[in-house]
Image (tube, rainbow, N blue to C red; front, side, top):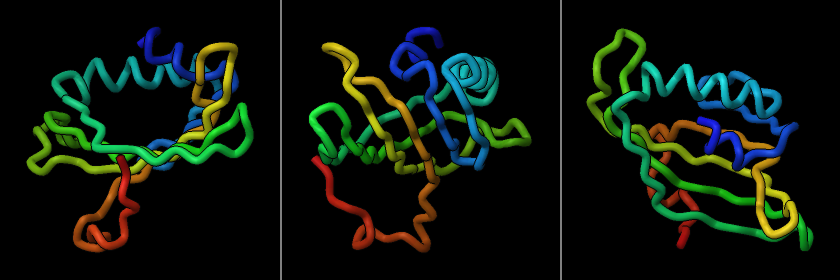
Length: 122
């Protein structure tokens, strides 16, 4: 999880899919370490494309479509359907690297949000 945390700024703000706010790199790393030790221990995550829109030369807005399989739901049973989400990042240039400074992740309800209402990505 230290490697994951190295992708975010020290003051990162993240809203996860359940609506919780993770403020700062240390909180971000602790939360993900706890989740990956239990609920996400056997999960696989795949991105299915992203859209990047530069806001300034050093700041971009990024939308990433991704899915997860193998995670467990709150009763400990393996989730039967893949979870699909879209996450929005604000990324900032830090020298030669780009770091996530803010993120908001949302589960996609496929019965409500069809493919016609999802921005195509590359």
